[in-house]
Image (cartoon, helix red, strand yellow):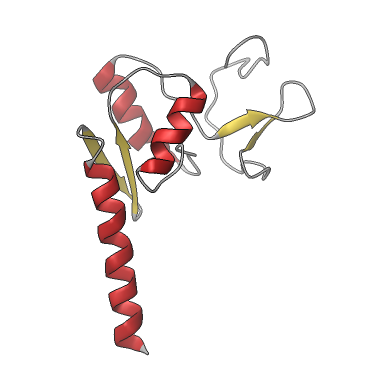
Length: 118
């Protein structure tokens, strides 16, 4: 029923917001997606755990607006950000954590190089 669907959507959004608020730091939104950071440095596995605890996942920019939302945190914190990507079995090629191929990229020239940590 339509009212039940609306209630379910609101409950879902509230639970996501509660998770993000636990991060106690910066939040921005683009295209209906929320992007957040706790501003702490961590390794990739810890980052994945914290995102999951907040009800989300590591950011995967799929268009220029989402890329800008992530870049907002990078510039605000003057640091790097992990992306929800991994190197594929083909060296130098990357894919999202769910093994899908990105249709949008905004890499610097000659990046990703597949050399060391990207």
